[in-house]
Amino acid sequence: MIAMAASEKPHILIGRAKIAVAVKRMAAEIEKDYRGRDLLVMGVLKGAFVFCADLVRLINLPLVVDFIGLSSYHQGQQTSGSIRVTHFPSCSLKGKDVLVVEDIVDTGLTTTFLLGYLKEKGTASVKLCSLTDKPSRRQVPVAIDYLGFTVPERFIVGYGIDYGERFRNLKDICYVEED
Ligand code: 5GP
Image (cartoon, rainbow, N blue to C red; front, side, top):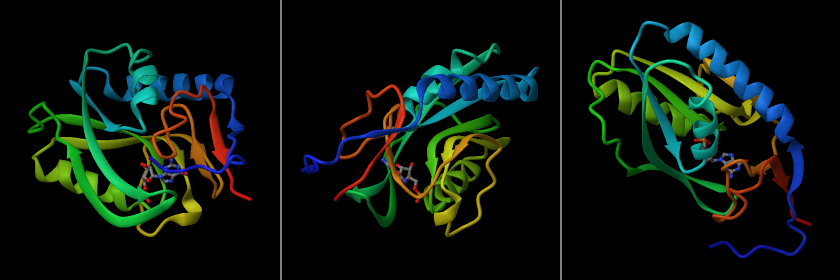
């Protein structure tokens, strides 16, 4: 658990109504693209769990949901640079059309690792859906097929996304700042 200064109160960046509109738009795009195919939705733990839950309930297609746990941020707001799998998918991935559901694409290192991991498992196709994108911090190029919001270079929390495991339960996408 990260100790937090009293001033680190979350401020709303993107409100719940705008989030709902974006999730509906992405679900409609996904539904159109995957009609007639078997879809495996792969939510990335933990940050994408709320987004994934809202998204799949708006996709009117037969689909399977699985989760993979990845860890890249180990110390507060700083990336450690090393990525590890903390929870392995339980479904077989071979031959599957996989839709990765992410919370944030920041440097792009985590997503690049994940897409490589899924391709190595023999998936038929892999597409990427991300709630947010921070292109200003990108270190490796990442193609996002379905995107909610481009966000500024701030540390975001809420709607499933944490800071030291806190704030996942906020209904809005917020940011925290220190003094
Ligand atoms: P990347 O490898 O693209 O730099 O990092 C992606 C992961 O870093 C995200 O899935 C998320 O876990 C974490 N991350 C990046 N930016 C933020 C942020 O603003 N807030 C939080 N809570 N995590 C972030």
